[in-house]
Amino acid sequence: MLSLPSFFSKFFKKKNRAKPTTMINLILFGPPGSGKGTQATKLVEKYNLLHISTGDLFRSEIGNKTPLGLEAKSYMDKGALVPDEVTIGMLKKKVHENPDVKGYIFDGFPRTTPQAEALDMMLMIDGQEITSLLALEVDDEEIVKRLLNRAKTSGRSDDADEDIIRNRLKVYKENTAIVAGHYQTKDKTHTINGVGSIDEVFGRLTEVVDRALVMS
Ligand code: AMP
Image (tube, rainbow, N blue to C red; front, side, top):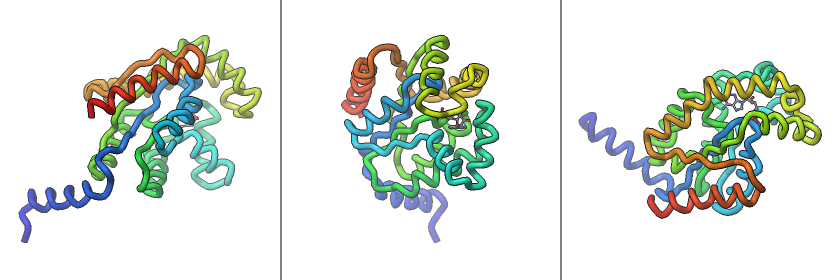
């Protein structure tokens, strides 16, 4: 019979072979309206990654009128966070459905410390880790302006109401900003000025990612 340490080492070695060690796993971080979705689309193209936005996944569940969607909607309508177990379960399912990719861009996830810990654990089991957390910085008044403007085309009710926007910003500061600190302790957090043209911000992001890739 295998001793406990050799069981674990066999287990992790087997898992380590499952995915290439060169995966690029990025967290695109920042308050709502900081440009994460726009920049994720461009990063996906450049680095050939899978974009996973938990907000988009919830909106798709709502569109399909699933029980998960109905539950998520009650939180999203107020600008509150959907509970961790629901969010983590949905994220893991999406990752496990797409194992053969070069890496992931997590957009809007993790938003709490338990979500960050669950993500780290899930990647570790596959011999992977987060490459970098890219935190876009945009001030509150610019965010409110951007989201009210986005509401005209997005049709999102949580973008159209200033009170809901301000609540989302409050939740970001109280529950989510701490996640940047979680990755800062691992030297993976990079703050990036999110104000400027789409291409200017993209240039700042790729400079950081390219540097991280050279170092890895
Ligand atoms: P977003 O599209 O990222 O702005 O997310 C829209 C809404 O979906 C948020 O205000 C939350 O209600 C919910 N949501 C998205 N991602 C998460 C997450 N990681 N944890 C909890 N709630 C989330």
